[in-house]
Amino acid sequence: PILSGLVGSEMCIRDSFEYGRHQLARKMAEAILELDPGSPLRFLCRRLIRKAMERKLKKELVTRIDADALVYEVGEEPQIVFRVLNKSGKVARFEVRQGVVGELFIVFDKCLFDGSHITNSERLPLRIKARQQTVVLKPEQGWECEIDYKLPRDLPLRKIACRARFRVTFRPSRWEIEGDRDSNIPLASEEMEIWVIPVSYTHLTLPTNREV
Image 1: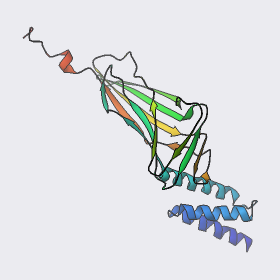
Image 2 (image 1 turned 90 degrees about the vertical axis):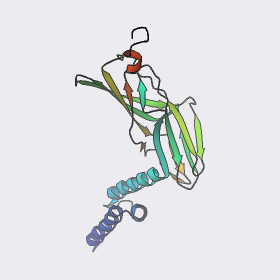
Image 3 (image 1 turned 90 degrees about the horizontal axis):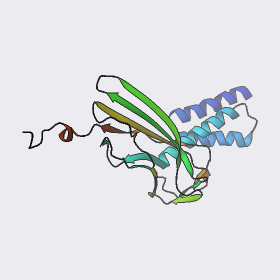
Image 4 (image 1 turned 120 degrees about the vertical axis):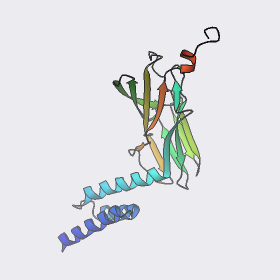
């Protein structure tokens, strides 16, 4: 009977999660852990609780990366911003310590017109000016920080097109949405890309009036 009860509980929790009832699965898993902390299902319960919290958080705190343009000429400086929008309908808070709010992933592709390409990637801490900060977001309120990124200065002016791809893992020291908190759950933004093209051929190739 005990074994069949465990199997039934596991199936019930898994089915609830797989059919989209994530918070129901979370409540059942939390109830099992509260009633029996040493339950054979404790590892499954903890894993499903975390997954349910991740899904809930991704819906409630929306992250994205924006740029002032999608295409730049060589020599221009892009303005890139990371944003967090509170869609939970509740008050959200997060804490920043040591001036770091997460990680920035950048992939830079140099695409030469002869068909070859070179790819470089880097992983950097996403920093803000304030080392210590508590951010409070009311429903539908947003927060943003500028991404300090400079294009490589050695880009040739011709026969190349470059693509820079950005992704942020938002990982503040602690977040909370009206009592629901966890300091270890990150939020990954969708990837955003910009293109860098040679200086306009209008500037480089069209003859001047004197040459005509």
